[in-house]
Length: 225
Ligand code: AP5
Image (cartoon, rainbow, N blue to C red; front, side, top):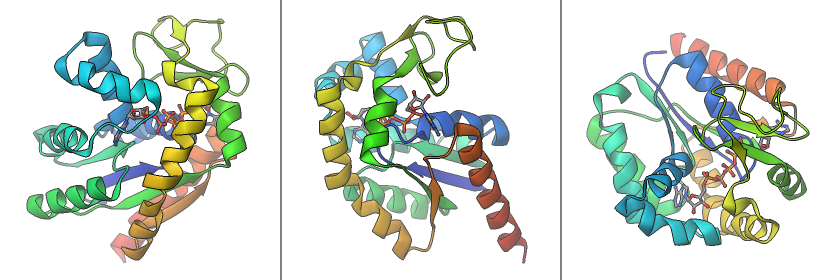
């Protein structure tokens, strides 16, 4: 496939970050996870971080204009010339339309929007046991489903594993509501464009990764026909 421009879509806790990390390794493409970028900005105490923190702690979406500017810079950068993986963006209709306009301007097209489907009950189960690396936020574990070799320690870099502030049960429920209201309409949006691909996210992380690899292989074959 000449260029692979992917979106990972799905509710909080569906496994976008877990699969994004694998896809990044498989395809060696830049991986832009808006949540990770924002959390790094909060950790570093930047203007963006200070602006975003209160929204994130409540489980609210950060304003569209802030997020769109943040992602546009990255998509336009030379490292994204051969493709990119977006996790957590777009999340509203305004963000999806801005991404389309940006892609048109750059003469690029989206390859697929991969929807990782899981139930609300599963989301709550997963987020209550999630642990993320304090050093490298993109390394993700689960106390039951994907435990680290040594309790509380990141297998990848040895960093301390912590619970995200927005994984408190009441915030998780609110984030799910935000997903249903503001992000779910994007499923129809990408379905209409013919690029939506659904994956059963209730399977194990390895099985989900295999399904995603299979669907990307199919897309590659279709492109060669
Ligand atoms: P963000 O960080 O993007 O949060 P999210 O979309 O809610 O997604 P999560 O990171 O919670 O879950 P995930 O799908 O990546 O699942 P994971 O792989 O970790 O955003 C955070 C906040 O930033 C937002 O609330 C908002 O404020 C702001 N923001 C971000 N983007 C924005 C935007 N575009 N616009 C406006 N605001 C924005 O997996 C979850 C757990 O399950 C882990 O413990 C994992 O080990 C486990 N797990 C994963 N897969 C499986 C499996 N198959 N089986 C069993 N367990 C599994």
